[in-house]
Image (cartoon, rainbow, N blue to C red; front, side):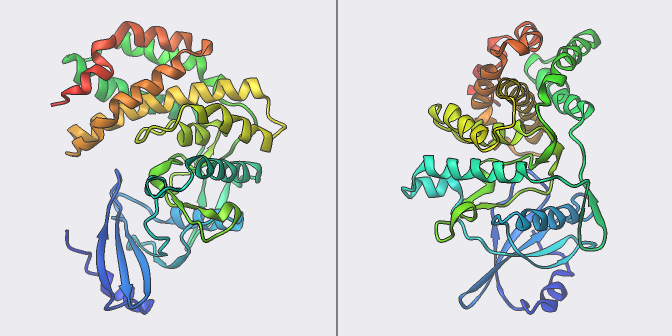
Length: 340
């Protein structure tokens, strides 16, 4: 895909004109990334179509995380109107790559948990300074959580059943979730990074302490319950995190934040884990059908495993009953053995 016409002048403004360019792997968003090299130096250009992706949140939240002593890509330059950001290049050693190279998986996940504890212990402002304007952090409201699990009704259920979703079935689904939303909110709201999992985390062993974890994807951050990011880290939809890690990382996180009510936090973790897994089931079908990205479907059995794990918490009984009634076993993980 050709680069926007204004890229050349943008790079020239920061003395990166004429650099060699190599596209980097993208994600499920509209953003693109290009690595720039000149001699021994490198940088990363983020390109976000202004009509689809705003870069102001990325700049504002990245600067906030940097003030907490975390490793986020330093911003070399930005043109928010053009959707262009020039970033420090943190390399290619994502968590999965580091683990394949022989780095201790337990150490990586422990360090990533410590990063969360640091972020969540800090006061979370309503607004953060950006480039041109302040960025107001959205709130993870009950309405938003409901809209996200509605993706099961809009994309997942019609695909696996081959029929539309009757209104009474949809209403029963929303009522079941509404009954558990209050349990999701344990403790004061924190800055939730929303996609805090292995594809967005890098291992930087040359740095020390919390800075060994490079955090890449945080522009969707919002104010919400702390358990969400721990769920994102441990219940990863794209890779199998060892089951033994869950209790250990939960204990590590709670030890770092001793004022939290453990039972309430564990319940919040289960509710948010179920909510997140349900959303992802719908998102992966949407990426396949609407956006022509079928590769995400291979993760659906793992997502179902995560959802079912959370639904076994007693607090989620009404949600589990709805899934047991309307999405039986053949429409769950087994459905994705042959997704076409």
